[in-house]
Amino acid sequence: DGGITQSPKYLFRKEGQNVTLSCEQNLNHDAMYWYRQDPGQGLRLIYYSQIVNDFQKGDIAEGYSVSREKKESFPLTVTSAQKNPTAFYLCASSIDNSGNTIYFGEGSWLTVV
Amino acid sequence: RKEVEQDPGPFNVPEGATVAFNCTYSNSASQSFFWYRQDCRKEPKLLMSVYSSGNEDGRFTAQLNRASQYISLLIRDSKLSDSATYLCVFTSGTYKYIFGTGTRLKVLA
Image 1 (cartoon, each protein chain N blue to C red):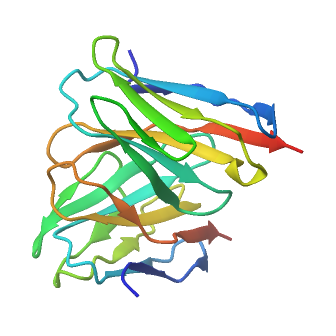
Image 2: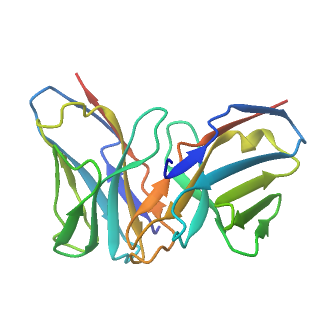
Image 3: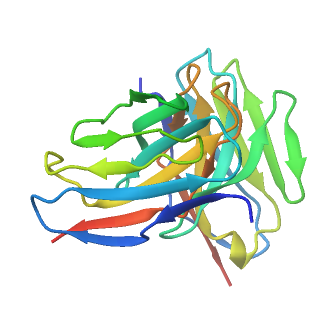
């Protein structure tokens, strides 16, 4: 089955802990993205990567880190520096960065307890 | 002016009704436009791309008005299963997708 797989689907984090959200795609897409969605708000871009070993900050990168060591993988680490991490996190990919359709994984719900 | 504006709704309509949503955008250089559907606590899924000449997919019709900088989505013969939040999406630059906050539709039996 082709698509984007995110894990875990639900994650609880204690304050002060770092957590890593996994994102794997088998669509052979070059571009990958991480978004955050909060109630009543549009998706906000955290980080994006246009190609392996390259990534760029989005609009709300503070408190987050990513890596892109393989084309199919783009994990997101939510660090303790992120002051309000409770949100729905969506990983996405597109064939390239020229405005083609963007596809999403099923999302990860992160709750700080 | 906000990059994108979308009426949050909710739009409560009876089954069989026709309903339309608009979404305005501020970046006149935007090249690609889409409508996505998002169910509660799920990921957004592509409903349809929006082409300059307008396009139709079954009961759904999308249109683009570049002069007035908005896109629209028309749903005919609404079904209960159409109840969802509809997000407008457009591109801004080479990597950036701008997402509306969504319009919530509830189709009533």
